[in-house]
Image (cartoon, rainbow, N blue to C red):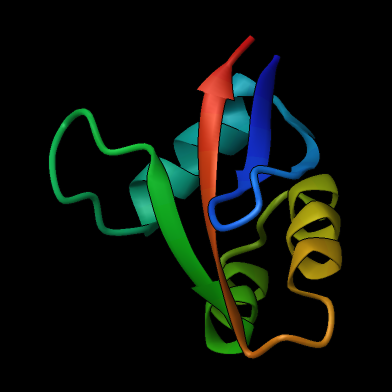
Amino acid sequence: MIGLHDKDTGAALGSITEEQLQFLIDQLEEESSEDQDYYINRDTLDAFREKNADPGLLDILERALGDRADIEITWSRG
């Protein structure tokens, strides 16, 4: 499984599958091939919904965002 974390706090956000990670990689901008962090905001989640993102992935990201305007997340294989 792949773990998602809050980049600022290091807090675990949840685990995602390889397919869910591939969706993130395909949808979000990476600065390099080794980039493992992403910026997420409400508009990002709306775009993911329009592209039929996996409901489990959306749930993790929505909970991570909470009442904040945006969040940076990182992922790692564990």
